Image 1 (cartoon, rainbow, N blue to C red):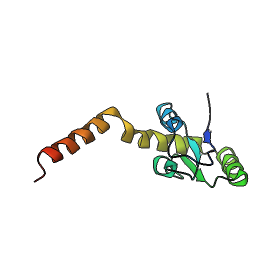
Image 2 (cartoon, rainbow, N blue to C red):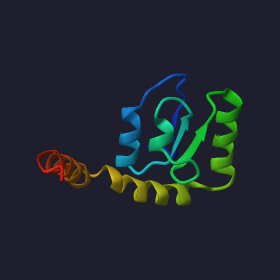
Image 3 (cartoon, rainbow, N blue to C red):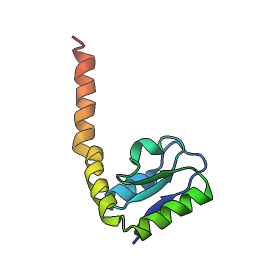
Image 4 (cartoon, rainbow, N blue to C red):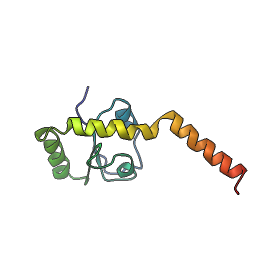
Length: 103
């Protein structure tokens, strides 16, 4: 159980923790490293902050002081649809079809 999944990486390319948070529909705080910004839209699914203690603390305080759980959970539910299996397989099939018939 968690109210907010906090991923305080100093360096990263991506994180499997993010997909787990999406699965369980949990808002996230990620540091702005690697590709995390692309998978966690700031202000929609949670926060993207500088990898600094003050920025992380301010976002956590904002989350609880301003009751952002409902808003961010709704954003997570909407964003999570991008990562469903049917979307991924459809994209793979589209790429395959474009390679087979480029014109």
